[in-house]
Amino acid sequence: MPDPEPNAALDAWVRGTLTGAVAYARSLLRNRTVAEDVVHDCFCRLLRRADVYDLPNDGTKLLYRAITNACINHTQRARSVSSLDDGELSERLADGKSATPAEEAAASELEAAMNRGLARLSVMQRAAVELKSLGHSLEDIADTLGLSATNAGVLVHRARRALAAELAAFLPKVP
Image 1 (tube, one colour):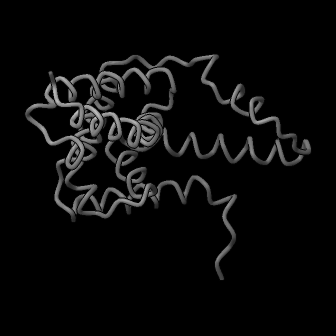
Image 2 (cartoon, rainbow, N blue to C red):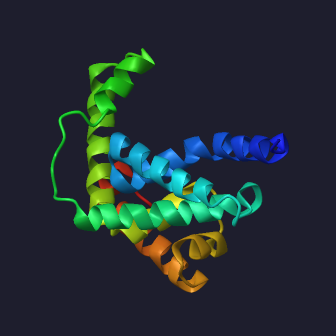
């Protein structure tokens, strides 16, 4: 009879990393459905090799690297197609929160500017800035993306600078 302990550890690892992994993939791909598919495929590939990897301890870095590579592959192979069902409207409606028309317009303009800024970044820059926003160190980002820490820092810096330029109208003026 198989030992139930490894399965419990893998279950805990999957449950603990799933939400963050989907959010990370979604930030890179800008599409929830495709992001969920990519994450599912990455989990399946890693779990098939659970006997080789120590997933509860090292799996998160492996998972994020697999997601990054899968998102890059998807982005390079995919045609640019706009979707009418990107999930943003349904998320707002699901929140049940109402805002004034002025607040909704301002939020919509900010969201559009942020999406434009993110769309202009390379996948590697989006990955680096997203990992940084999730609290990862430059060393972790470098390890996940297969880069040097210096290169990861450059990607984060350039991504932040590009986003700041895109969002300049929404940022307070610095004297």
